Length: 267
Image (cartoon, rainbow, N blue to C red; front, top):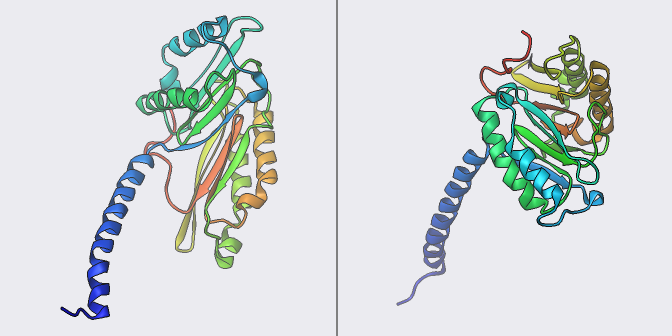
């Protein structure tokens, strides 16, 4: 039987389209799950070396990750130190400003095993998820700005000239920095969320610092990263800059969790 080329193509396309449709449904399903708290980035501190199985450092590590103080997840952050050199260890864990309670606990439960998977037996490192970060080190740097562990993620789509002139992302971030560090709060990290209507568009933003940052260091950290990573995000339709000491983000869609703002923040 003779089959015309056009018929052959149609018969071939049917199974291909079916496969593509199934793959798209699978990707969409995975994306919808991962969007709740996706992995973002990690860094292993190679210069700190590795610990040996059964060592005192490993014993300290196991103890420190299992002895969380009561109320840590409700507050959204924790810092713990244990041991003496060369087995000294410091752990810092912090949830995003709009993440606390069960969501914070869930993020820790996700980040902990993934850190040890990605940085096996490393004495130090940091891992970022959308809603939290987890940090280990042998150096106690509480209160000091971390200039080494920062990175930028930006939307591949560029902002239109018209929208850029109306919004000016760097100016929007400048305003967030001022608002985040305006009022002193001894019991919580400096944190703010912003929302600005620009014509038919709305820009959403968040800026915050780690709980150990002073008002001066928080502002210094945010301003430095706003300048240092400007080329990464200045013309993009959304971006985030994350670090151990401070982070900020802006998008043209709502990303802040409902009822944002942990209970320990002042109204």
